[in-house]
Image (cartoon, rainbow, N blue to C red; front, side, top):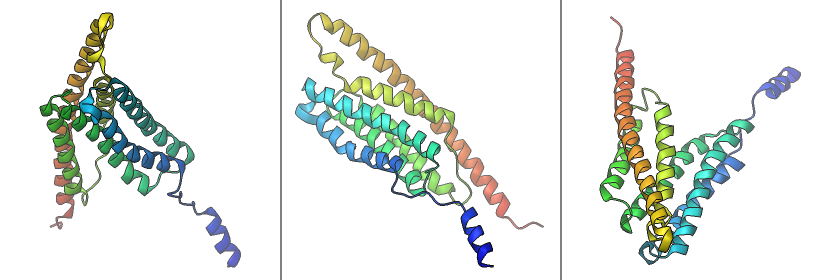
Length: 214
């Protein structure tokens, strides 16, 4: 019996520790959020050096998002803590970038309100349907994240402040960031509408399944 019990324990999969590299990178990303805000808001965003440092911090934070997910899947170290912290880190990072850029006048407030409003709505819907099922991330959501990250990086970099012969180049790069941001907003709205529809279907199916059969 003891041998059978030992064999059963050996066959049982070992749960991944919460103290692993992917989760450490996620926590690091959260810690970079206030640093990003401080660098971006310094001197109302007019200091080119601080803007460049802010862009570097944002780029590194975005890079850790991709790295920690790949590491967690490759090493089999996906944890419930990681699943909880990862979206928090993503929303805190992009939220800080959106709000900070609007404060210094680099990004229209209606864009920030629309994007953050969409995120608040989706979070509310997740809790609304959680007892009926979990709605997985869609491919459109991943495209939205990529477009938002690219556009935000373009707005953080001080392209419009380039002077001399570099000014036309800077304005061209800024307009490229505007185009990417427009695409990001469009995908953000489209995926938000899609998520509302999927949440309603999950809740409808869940309520139907809970009804007692005749």
